[in-house]
Image (tube, rainbow, N blue to C red; front, side):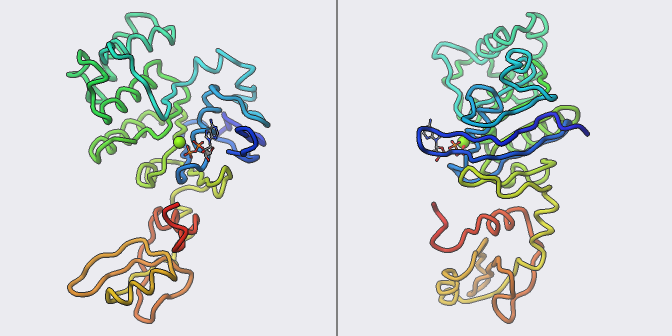
Length: 296
Ligand SMILES: Nc1ncnc2c1ncn2[C@@H]1O[C@H](COP(=O)(O)OP(=O)(O)O)[C@@H](O)[C@H]1O
Ligand SMILES: [Mg+2]
């Protein structure tokens, strides 16, 4: 497949502060490409530049070989964009908001009406379209924003933390909608939640401190962790000492002892057994969440 988005040596500074530092990568069509990283990693900065609402300090982004900023409207009409924070006008109902968004996108009225109906059903807001969107819950507002981004059937869907505020059921529904959508489109999405992208993203870019740490498929990350994830039983006292020396990804109480999931290159304690790794283990390992560093 041809790369349709190419990011070349792109950097963004806010004053003297470098939020994203000289990153390059390309994305193929027909896939989900995820930016995964902790808060402050530079995801929103990158997303806003991909949506052409912010200009890079250095470097460029090409869509089908053409600079997105130079392409202007020719690019913007191809994208659907969900910002990290969406603000709603006080007196708008859900339907008003979608109709207004459709008008801004230059959609023809009859088509807009049809799409609004389809999308309101698929994001589960059909019964709430008449209500004021400021009265929606956080999850409902997020779903309304997702519907807005999908309105004009964009070739490229750009979503910044699309699942923030969604409950577990809404998250699953979201993943299903996006997977189906990405069959013949490109979806670029940012998240700090591993399970959002674990099974749906074709490529996952892990970023931190404005830098690309890794770009791999989910399977590649998991494969990388084989032989590095362990389960060991220990007492609460042992755990207290041990947790200062290793990355612990989970603790489960088992009778009077603890079953501890440990991420480590070598066997941590003599009776530890290997566990099947997950993407979350890779995230903790690669971002080196060592004791004292966690909770940044
Ligand atoms: N407008 C701004 N002015 C100054 N610093 C900013 C601005 N926006 C973001 N930053 C800083 O840039 C870094 C990356 O932020 P952001 O792109 O929002 O990361 P993420 O979305 O991964 O949390 C953070 O350290 C943040 O504080
Ligand atoms: Mg962000």
